[in-house]
Length: 89
Image 1 (cartoon, helix red, strand yellow):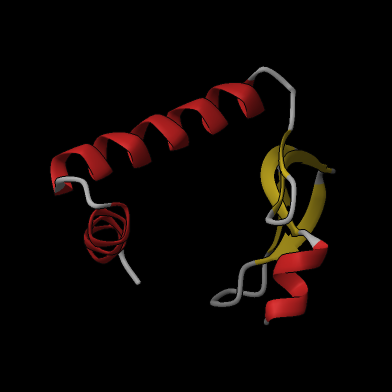
Image 2 (cartoon, one colour):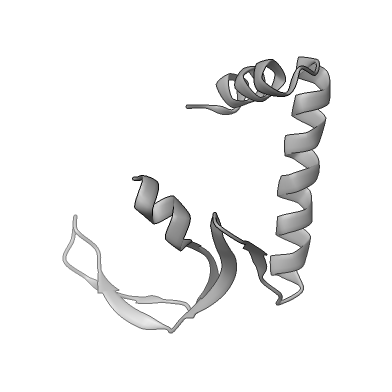
């Protein structure tokens, strides 16, 4: 499911316009992004938790040349499904 399909589904289920559904999705993603950027986490009971995880620097290998390369440390977004969501799958 892509964003357009999600917007259409939410608009139909909630009885709102696609424009309103799109604005709601954009507001949600912006709020989650700002919270994660600030070092916090977002927990939706029954759905899951969005958090930030740190990846350590490591060495890798270029698959074309076989040369060793250094991969920098970075922060990545992480999602852990809640108990209810996991049970429904």
